[in-house]
Image (cartoon, rainbow, N blue to C red):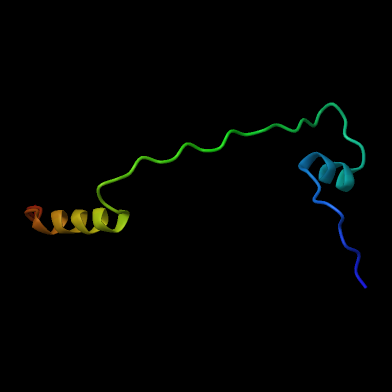
Length: 64
C-alpha cells in the first residue's frame, strides 16, 4: 500500500523536503496574479485572415 499525504505541502515546505535546509541565498516570493487582458474586437485568426486579404489586394512589385 502507498503512503497517503495528510495535507498538501506549500512551496517552502516542498523546497525544504527536496533540498534539505534552505540558506539565505534562496527566498520564496509571492507573485501577484496577472491582470485580466482587455477584450479585443477580433480574434487572432480573424486578424490573420484580414492581413492575408490585404496582402492579396496589393499591387504586385514591379520587376526590374
